[in-house]
Length: 373
Image 1 (cartoon, rainbow, N blue to C red):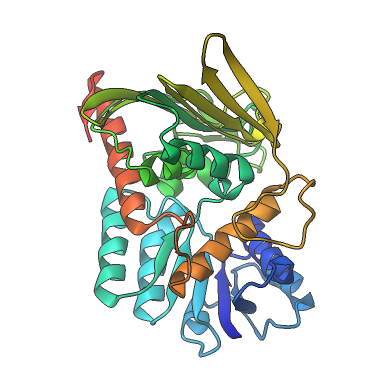
Image 2: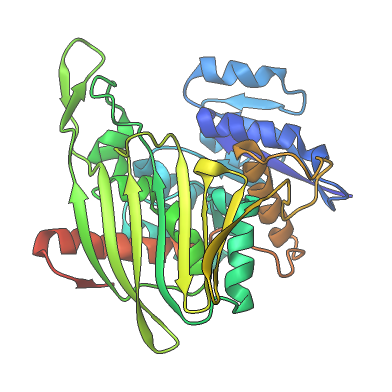
């Protein structure tokens, strides 16, 4: 059985999540490829010390150049602030490594395009991280849409909601500063989550009207003073797209100030013959609308119906660690040409499309009008 060797750049929250997924890889049933975490890079030596407990890790370094030029690394997973994406992603590709990079794939459209073009030029396998579609609920939503059972689709809603900024005393970090996260603000942090499924289904907006909000404009700096918080906290995008010759509205929500929402991904799709909706707020519940003599919504509790079979019993609930591992399984299988007809990770093309939507949203915020994507 083939084994692929993986290095992580950015060993914090998401780096540890990736390491956890690799450590549970044996839970995937009859999976044709093994993975091995071999190297980790982070500027914080205290973070690196956590990885000392992982026997397969042979390289712990504060120098990413050492990691990307290691012969013990085939793939790099990278989770760093958005302003670092372009240079690091390009260096990874030029070092001959394949890449799974965190969203938004560059601080702006220009950076995303350059990364995408270089990946194509060098023929590297590159994907963008987006975990939520690999839960059973989104998988069922996609299946029902593709079946055609919804009839003529006339409305779409998709979003990702946090309440992480509701605490006004929360100290500032890089995600609240445009210098590091980009002018697109919350759209860069949460937008790919909202767009991954729509874009994969071919629902590409042609126009967008944006309502962007800077609600909390300063935060404690952690040193006894206050710092400017200059990013967009909330974004509501009213978009238009063409489905079978008909103009269809699609609403996209990306919010850090959404009261009560810890980490909520949702999608709703309505058609003349039926509808579907799913939210991680009720992880097991898949809702399906039937348009008959009586109209009703049916709730189905979904068990552990993951796209890539595991040893876990089907009655159990799936969670974030599960969908993260499933995302990486999709990445590895597609890299090996074995994905077949299963749902895959977000592509560089989709990452660029998301940035084109965000760029149009910034123009719309300034003009107060619909802008062309």
